[in-house]
Image 1 (cartoon, helix red, strand yellow):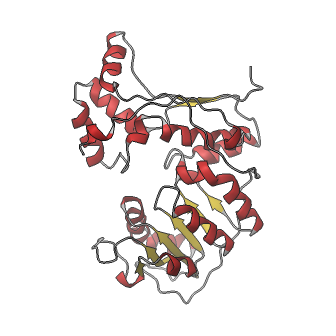
Image 2 (cartoon, rainbow, N blue to C red; image 1 turned 180 degrees about the vertical axis):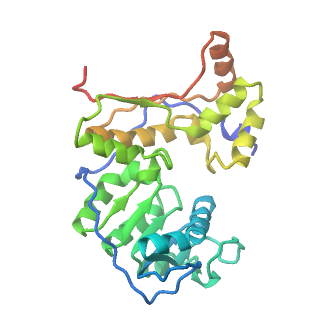
Image 3 (cartoon, helix red, strand yellow; image 1 turned 90 degrees about the vertical axis):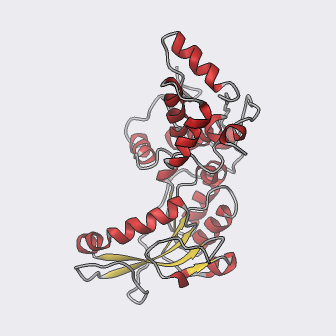
Length: 303
């Protein structure tokens, strides 16, 4: 299937995210540390503590994180007096050469074995709802801090996972689920305690933005999609980038944090850009405008 064929999906006027009710606050608890876990990376200063990390998924995101921790090991140890040790990595294929600076013996394709592994922090980077939800629930019940950038997981189960984190006095961090490295969630959380926003409006999907820009410059849709994939901008199922599902998931998380609107109660109207993306782009340009996928949310009580 070509990238263009993958985008041939029907549009849907509405998408909803049923979730159980729970509190919005994210509790944070200091992780448990130990000096007995094997460490990776070099450091010029002797760390005082070791943080054990269990990593679920070692694709583009997971492997990138491993390299970042390895390359930053000396600076982290010197500045904070800690060292991160990746002690378990869940993958589909343990024989694949992933070219990451950790011992291959920590890789496992056994979910049960991974869930039983004791870690201070569990990082979920597998994407989708399952087995991500199972991994998240297991980690929080064991008292491990959970870090995830999985917008589908948080949009569908964020409230219940937050409630579980509160119950077990641990932390749930999903700041990267919206905006990547941009501090969208933390900024909104800070605003809620001071001057809450009256509405939220913006571009929440970078892939569609990139592809449309290429179309505006004269590129064909398939070549623009291939370029996005080559640059690591598109996910495995990038239909969600153009049918509004990705932006809808992010918007439901934003509405939850900014306005306290339970995603199960949020009414979302979703407009798909496909099929017809090239034609829509040409029409916008001919009228002196630019086509963009805009996400917007306003609380019912706002003017």
